[in-house]
Length: 338
Image (cartoon, rainbow, N blue to C red; front, side, top):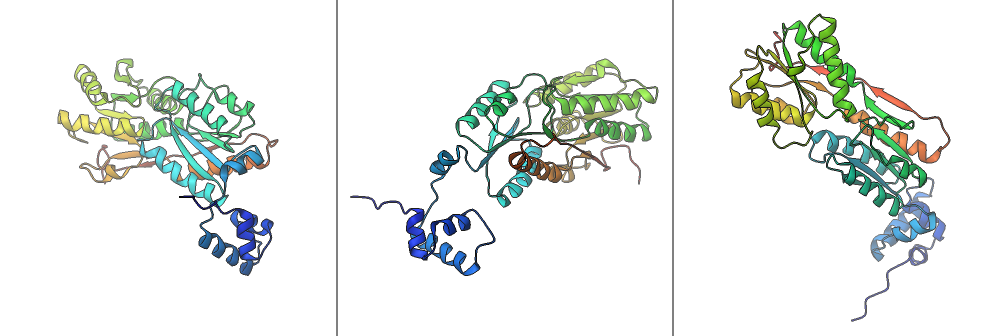
């Protein structure tokens, strides 16, 4: 059985009795097309089941209409929330979005960077796996606009949107100090991840300023995707003495720490003050509700898309660096008293 030939943009133009240029403008979301003509085009597209040839379009432009977001952990609700906001802005600009999960490994990140170059995507936003080891220059060398978000890369001088993570750590520490914490424990990530390193630094700085430096033995660094985080934290806490506060520096570690404290039967806030990062749904569904440093995920996603669009249309503009402020949300798990 012979299949019917795939309808072309010329077929749509003939059916709608308009030019191919008008069809192209309608398909690309141009709002300056006469509404009557646009409706005829959309009707013809629906009746003929026309689908644009994206591969052909990419070849003609030497680039696709696809944007890519490369994240280190797709299971982390923080990244999916940023993606949702990013995709909303991208769609309004006529871009589709693909998400790639590097699994916190440089090798996987580099694989996806090379894949995006091969696919000739029109832009990439990246939350890097490392502040020191990167393949981001491969994208810029290929002429693909790049925007970093959430995490810094030391050698990158381009566009970036991030949160003031030093401030995030300081907010957590100042709150604990106000509530009487004197011997805190920090659960943090690798030294190559700028976001958790900065939160750790801000937290320690506030305690040092108060004359209560954090004991180096009360800092536990874990792989941010470690499945054994609860067990490793439980072992570390069993060896620590006089711990009266715990700060977890990202969302997955916050979840692991809360589960660990519950398993140890360390009452919050009576036995230990607990502050985490990222305002996820579960944090208000548990007892006690979790005190958190909330990140402005909506602004992160929106700014990442805006910066990428600007870099695509104005490649010679000066690099833009956006630093957003975190917010302390006080709930029951800390030593706060109403």
